[in-house]
Amino acid sequence: MRKPLLAALATLAIAGTGVAPAVAAPQAAAVTVDFAGIVSLSNCSGSVVRFPGSTDTAPALVMTNGHCLETGFPSPGQVITGQSSSRTFGLLNSAGTTVATLRANQVLYSTMTDTDVTIYRTTTTYAAIKSAYGISPLTLSASHPTAGTAIKVVSGYWKTIYSCNIDGFVYRLKEGSWTWKDSVRYTSACNTIGGTSGSPVIDTSTGQVVAVNNTGNEDGASCTVNNPCEVDANGTVTVRKGINYAEETYNIPACFTSANVLNLSAAACTLPKP
Image (cartoon, rainbow, N blue to C red; front, top):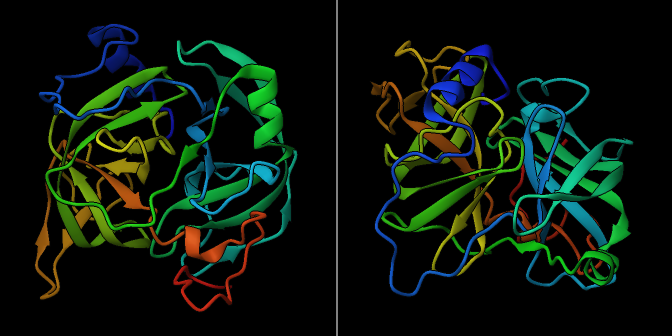
């Protein structure tokens, strides 16, 4: 998991604050990716997100990791919905400056089973944020990402943007007691560190979110906390020290109405249920 660690602080001190690792060659059709709509949490990163069908007057949502939940890691098999929250988020503009504090009133959904995501409902709307700060939410793609896609991982905690490509997909990613399905594996240039947990993974050709950054193998250990291992359909385990991962988000939009109401009973919704 990519919550802040002393090692991350040391890494940043060596690399230089705000300096991203090696950047992949930009694609001709790439859109501008900056910090607008990104948020900082007390221990993680996140973003203000909408779904393709969300209305402007719907409550604004913030997405981060399940393991960033303020009440602690959800247990394997646990799905949390409708939990009261007053968590705050620092809203960033395109330059990475904090321009507002958003506040949650509910955890709409949180789990570390199959995926690693928390979605908060805030006390304001997309329209109100746009009117006050000129900032639009990021849109979650409803399509499965593609291997080779150029991506950017945008951390509000560190105010750093990592650039790389999707290297491939992992049948099962195991870390400690948790297992995630169809995880995104980055190429090595996205050398994410503690505090980047919950950062949106943005497809640079569309500007849409295709995954949420969540972990990486730090020490080369196998299937332990902070050292996830890859398991293929035949049960073969592969360890990739220094490689980082994210969880896909394309299956989330089908579980929400246009008013951003969670509906886990929707026919197309495949998210784990309580």
